[in-house]
Image (cartoon, rainbow, N blue to C red; front, side, top):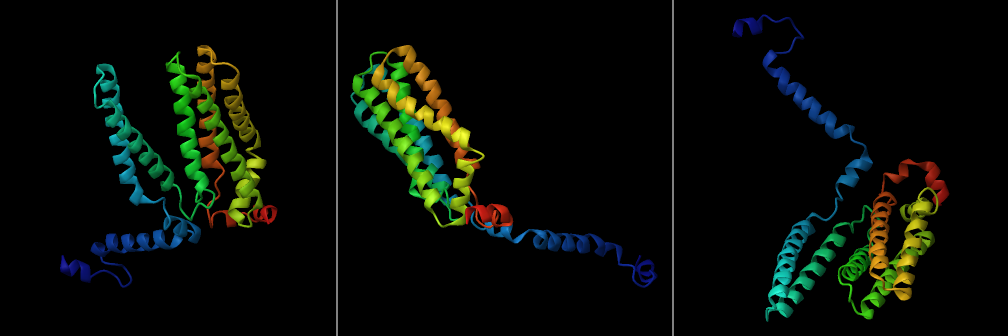
Length: 248
């Protein structure tokens, strides 16, 4: 076998060296062919150290919520303590979920508005869902629905104003998306929030509350859609000079 290898013409590589040579060249090509903005974006992924606490918090929330349901049915004396633990673990899970998206590579997410959006969504849908299930809910619950809807409306309006007044290119580009291509979706979401503010103050009829829950759910789904499609990441946005000129 050694003699056959030595008999190869000059310039023909040893057959055993081919896989290593090709693999080595392929690895170099893979590393060097990636655009610089993708390498930079990959270095700033959403905070992975918050993923495990989020899973833990939401898992505990699920457990305590189940226990709270059982203890409510059996009228247990530990109901108040389990209810408090349910609330605390739910809030912790919400905070971790919001903080995961707060990274420098996504300027529109890296602000307190992200936390406010997550908490307002949970509060609004939670309150209106209780009103849907409990037909004898107190009036203060419907006042809370209006309050939480008003909080979400204010969050969206202030965030849009913050984006419009920013000197940062990525934030201005997000504003141009929300006021341009995504304007109709944004206006529908804001109109739904206005309805969620007004309807509970006018009527507390069970059927109307159920319809309000369905509409509010659609509105928050539209909000999640806008949250993801309107963000402009760093570096990647710089590849579009026409958008940069409009944002400047």
